Length: 129
Image (tube, rainbow, N blue to C red):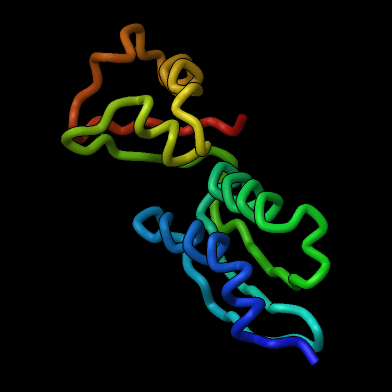
């Protein structure tokens, strides 16, 4: 029989990834045992966030044969984001894509000519890669 605590520990990075996007509206509704698999039920706010969670699942176990997931996207493809004091596009790129190297795609998608000139409170949209 599967061990719930062992599976929770294995997939802890996935649960943490979902919780990391809590400010954007991501929630974990259930983490339980479903037969021999970990049942993970969650809601994420956009395809951008769903893709990031999938990246983490594949890092944990590319086959994810012991995971029964129900990850629902509650919003659209792109992720709205309000720039906070201390943010830069590289930091935002790291948060949403797991790599700081996609900051130019965020700048282009939002018509930002100079990636170094963003302001706290500014609304941007994080595009799907």
